[in-house]
Length: 143
Image (tube, rainbow, N blue to C red; front, top):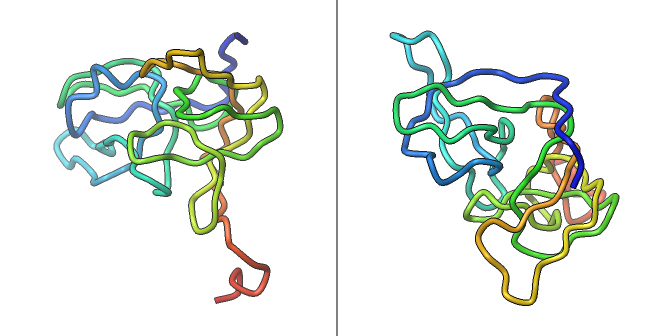
């Protein structure tokens, strides 16, 4: 699998225990006035991600987030090179579908083993700095 190549990383604060969620998609849930930093949580199905978690913080600790670059990402299904991806209910990458926030593109085929585990992953381009929304039809994109 490819090496990490960060173009942009940010440090946030874990809103919940994310110690088992390294290389998962995460989202911003609120702003911590005391810490002067966004608080992040695991991304749900089709939700807008802020990036990919690069460490494994417990609640209240710094969370390193890749916003743009090349990173590992946990997957829930086999994915092809060039395919756009979004989050499933567990913050794993799945093929982009209608009405979900697209987080980037697969750059290394993601193949699940015969007995998949919760840590199957592939290499992706992270493009959450400017995510775009998937729409079922061209007409839906206007309204």
